[in-house]
Every structure is written in structure tokens, then in C-alpha cells.
Length: 315
Image (cartoon, rainbow, N blue to C red; front, side, top):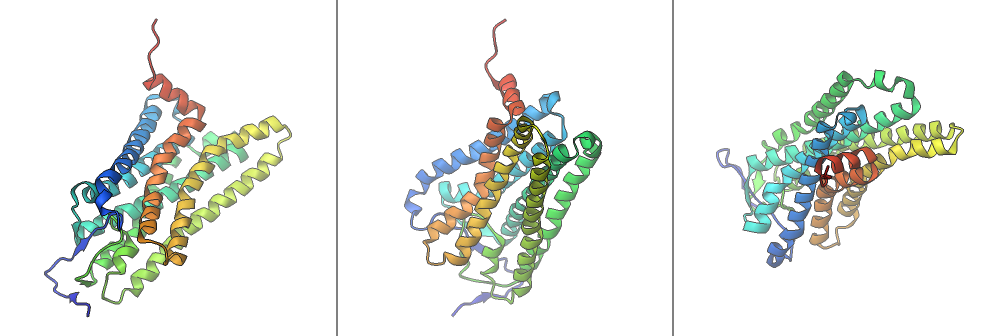
């Protein structure tokens, strides 16, 4: 029989989990995770530093890239404390209040990343389809308003979820599936009627990730149509080349999201380790790969990194 904590004065405590059946190897597994976090933090800070210091990069495309780097930093730092606490110190308990705060930031930065990728798709659409009006449409003021709208939208849709979760009662057997708190993971531990929160969470995912992915796809359909109308093949390739980095980043974000959804829906027979690894990849892969993609694929960023952090030539 499951006993629920119905006392209003007792705050629930959740138990975090590392990689199931690999608990004995957590100290060794912490090494690749630490390297991933180090790459994510170093790469995104480097991107921000280069764009800040290099005046030639003070353009709409790189301002949006700065917002993306800040989002990736926030996403990495949201999971870092509990992940390392579980792997290094075997500290598994987390107070409900701290858990709700963590899931708020994790989901806010996840939806913010989707919004920023949509804004970057709009930037590429304007640059290719309306090149003569690019600087007049995407002014600094407009970019600031887009960034603020993305942030407010992401925070606004996520804020009700921890507020609703606080009202529920939780069972004494309150073991989470991951080393960090996620909305659906906490929700399934409730012994209250949580249908409202469940339906709301699904609607939020559809209204954010679903809508953003459709509009990103629509943007690239219009971009492709505009590129095909260009007579010169060389100019076609040049125009498409400016979109390659963004396409790679979009795939890096949405492919793991789709993979996690498929595993969650149809992979119930799979090992819990697979579910955990998919969630880790979904949250860690974009912050790690995004700076690498832009550093390798974008000449201006690459040159900026070399000029600011590369070896100095002797005069």
C-alpha cells in the first residue's frame, strides 16, 4: 500500500538517481560528464567573449548567437549541481522546493532555446529573402525586444507547473528517474489527481516546441524557394552556406528531443539506463556542440577566436 505525505507542514524529499545498475562506476562516469560540462561552459563563454570583444561581430546574427550561448550556459548550470552531487558525493536527497526551482530553470531554458532557434531562423529568412532591408528590420532595439519576448514566453509557460506541483501530495516512495528534476518525472510521484498539470504540460510542449519547429521548417522552405530563384549557382551556395550552422544547431536540439519522446512512449521495455542516457544527451548535447558547430562552420567566429585566444605572432 502506498502511503502519501498529507501533512501540510512536512516538505517532501525526493531521491535523485544516477545511472541505474552502474552506481559502482559513478566516480568513473563522472569524468566524461565533467568533460562535457567543461566543454559546454568553456565553449559558450568563449563565443560570448569573442562576440563582445570583436566589433565586426556586432551584427544581428551574432547577437542571436550570444543569446543562444547564454541559454546554453543556463541549461548547463541548471543540471550541473545535482548531477555532480550524485556522481561525486552520492548525495541523492533533494528538498521539494529546490527540486521545483531546478525543474523551472531546466524547462525554461529548454523552451528558451527553441524560441531562440526560431528567432535565428527568422534572422536567416530576412538576410536571404529581404537582404536590402536586413539592417532596418533587425535593429538593436528589435533584437532586444525579440530576446525579451522569448524569455518572457518561456518563463510564462513554465511558471504554472512548479506552482501546481507544490499543491500536490507525494508518496513516501519518491525516487526520481534522473539526477535532476523534470516536470513529468516529479508529476508521476504525486498521489493527488494531477491530470490538470499533465494536460497543461502537454499543451505547453505543443505550443512551444511543436509550433517553433513548424515555423522553423516554414522559414527554410521560404529560404530555399528564394535561393532557387537566384540565377548564379555560386551565389546559391553562398546563401545556403550562411544557414548550415543554424541547421546543424536545430538538428542538434530537436533530434534528441524527438529521441527522448520516442523512447519515453515506445521504449518502456528498454533498460532504465537507456532512458537516463537519453535524457542526459537531450540536456547536455546542445550546450556542448553548439559552440563547436559555430566555431568550425562560421569563419568570422573562427577568426575571432584565433585573434583573441590564439598564439601571438612576434613582431
